[in-house]
Image (cartoon, rainbow, N blue to C red; front, side):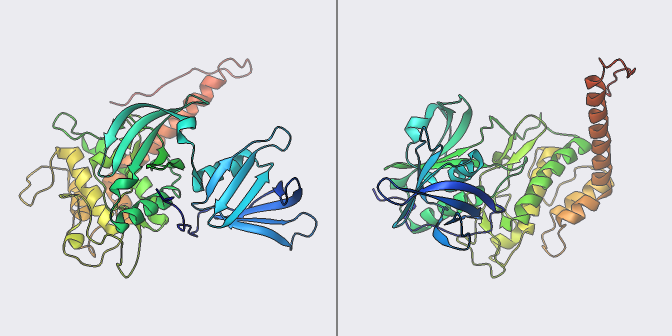
Length: 385
């Protein structure tokens, strides 16, 4: 089967600032040239070690095929192939190697990971819990079967999902570690989270607790939007947890880069009951579609129910104002992230959280200095009702 990522390179603002180091580039059968490596965004450039203005070679690492081959004398090595160009470089720092793992495609998944069990499934493949054979660290692997990707749009969607996941680096957003390809499958190695948001009558939250959770989700969503990305499928199934307190926005299968002209790969997408009205009406839309979906999730956290026009739940005035603002069917009047943060109940919960964080830091500091003779203090803790 053909290589999935051939001719699928791209250039995008990645946030990678200029990385420089001295490396050795193979230039002949047994010859190596000492040169200056510079990596900015996804463009790797090799310059003459003496005359830095002289470019010896360059390559786009986004979706390039990489093969790590460390040398006992030359250090960390990598062979990079992008279309008809191939470079062999030695002497990489661990930081450069990590970036190459993130943006490149490897071929030896079976040699690096051991599959432990299946933990999920989707339209084109399955999700597995795996273990890195070198350091025993566990991850989740999203596996796509190539033979099921019959529509060209399916391939484009997966390429875009990978591109977007590579940009994510936030505690409340799922991130990807590396990508692999075999003759039959694609493998996306992601962080492993074994807890998912559960909505039920038993798990309903009080207002302040629900808003604490909402604020963390809002932090993640704000980060996603700052990257000029719309998620378009926020729902409980796509919210995972590092622990019971820290939610993580996951599954970017419907995500896309915001376009003012509205020409997306999938214009009308999402999950029933969570999709903003303007998407269903085939209208042009923006980042506020995610606010609507998050508003539905917030309503569920409080009531365990999908919001309906005939709802008669009794919330505090400021909580009801927040729900009304997030769930406004008119995107012009719908709350923005800034509007949500200005809600009086949200501001009160946030202030309380900041006080407890500060007290926690003070408590940690006190504990660290308990054994210091010069400091006489009493350890204390605060318990909230």
